[in-house]
Each structure stands twice: as structure tokens, then as C-alpha cells.
Length: 198
Image 1 (spheres, rainbow, N blue to C red):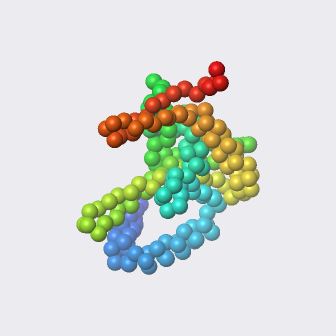
Image 2: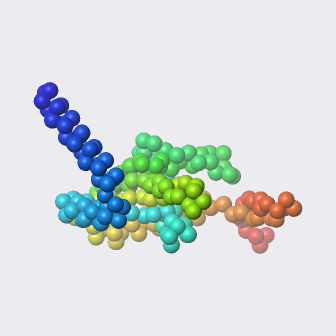
Image 3: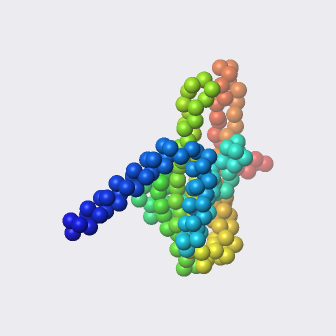
């Protein structure tokens, strides 16, 4: 028993030392190439397919409609099974809107096939020309499933998730009418959609 613990301790120490040397002494552009080949090697060894849905598209300039649809779908259909939730309040409703927290995993079942959704966030530190450090959060969902179900998941499941998520978004949408106040700030005015011809 003690020998096993000693072996594991030596392995973990060696891995930590190698990782520290790798991240400190190998230049970033070489690391990016090594990581590409490392992920290719993992792809050959793994039986699972991973699909990433990012929050922003067009280099972060536009919010992804697919990301919002997936978030709506997951908050409605799988939030009851998540361990950690994020509570957001809706302006017109007194109830909370629950969604998956960062780095949370939930399972969904489609036609007997289990898929896993991961909610991730990657924080990127950048330094501007003025010496300030800026950090950007890039959120994304990762869908993971066994590669033998690839056709069904890509052709049917993802389409269904996006369709249902967009329908949930339309049902929960709040209409805002902005008015220009004299203080030069824009204030939202919420109204309920109804039959305007009455």
C-alpha cells in the first residue's frame, strides 16, 4: 500500500515538474503546435466526439444565436439534474431563471443515447499598450457523445435542441421600448405583447 502511494507521489511530482518546465521554457508558438498534435493523438485514442458551441462569433463581435438557444434548452430541460446552478432574475417575473453554472456537466438522453453537455468558461489575460491587464471571459458549451452515434446526434439531436431552444427563447422574450430621457441615458420600458389591433 505504501509503495503504491510512493509511486503515485513520484508520478504526480514528475508530471508537475514537466508541466512547469513546459509552460515556462517552451515558447508560446511552439506550445500551440505541440498542443495541436497532442489533441490529434487524443482524438485517435478517444471514442468520443466533442462539439464546441461558443458564445460569440465573428471574433467576439456578435453573440451566437445557437449558444443562446442551447442555453435556453439546457436551462429548461436539464437544469433539474445539474449540481451547480446559476440564478438569474427576470425583470418582469418574480421567479428566478436557473441555468447551468460554469464548469458544470449534465446528461441528456435522446433516443436511448446519452450525451453530455459541459458549460465552460475560459479566462484570457491580455496586456494593453497602456500597461493595463485586461481579462476576457469566453463561454462555451461542449457536447460530448460516443462516435458511433455521430450521424444521429449531428443530423437530428442538435437540430432538435436548436429548434426547441429558439422556441423557448421566443416564449420568454421580453420586448423593450427605449426612450431617450433628458439625462442622456437610455431607460428600458417593458410592455406586454398583446393584440395591438384592439
